[in-house]
Image (cartoon, rainbow, N blue to C red; front, side, top):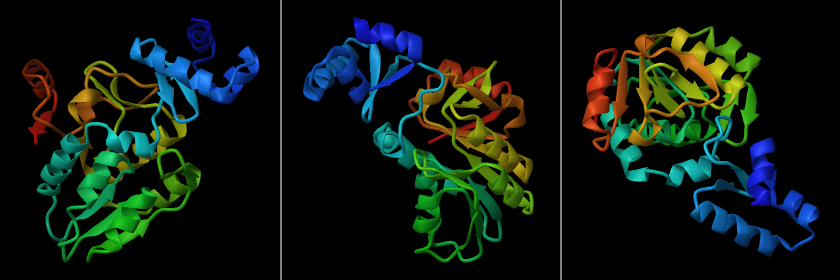
Length: 244
């Protein structure tokens, strides 16, 4: 339980830090972390652990890619149906937006502005025009963010923006763990006529560290069929919801 106490104070810790503090091997620490996670007391990360439910916690791209994968595939396919030939879209970095990108290869007249390095690479194999904005690379999420990214985004006007998110709540709105990335997302939605949020059912009734936008400022949320019916009904009072 000492590890839990450390996390309650510091929110995160690495395996190496715990090895030094308790003078034990890394394998012992990893075994302890696994037991604590099985008891739902902590959440393991690559190289350490975080406090369960911490608002600043953010899994890596690889970790998120494995979570609710089929739901994200379905959402990406459904969201692609909202795009018309001739559109200019802004595509936010993220695992669900990446699934959307995989369905854009057949478009002949589509311009995509994105801050996702992996998304730009994915789209390089297709026919659409791709603009990868510059900025500071968040290696954790493969997103280009910061003042340079925001300045570049301010030069464009788009028909639609597709945003990823870590949390959706009726009161808290659309939220994300990182302040800098949140500001880049805000700039994205300011440059588009229509704001579309992609989020699987696990993101609902979750609140992360930084608000990006109020629910009322979102035009459409695309989620999956696992979203509870009562949640669909309550959100539909403020925003259109499409289920995949």
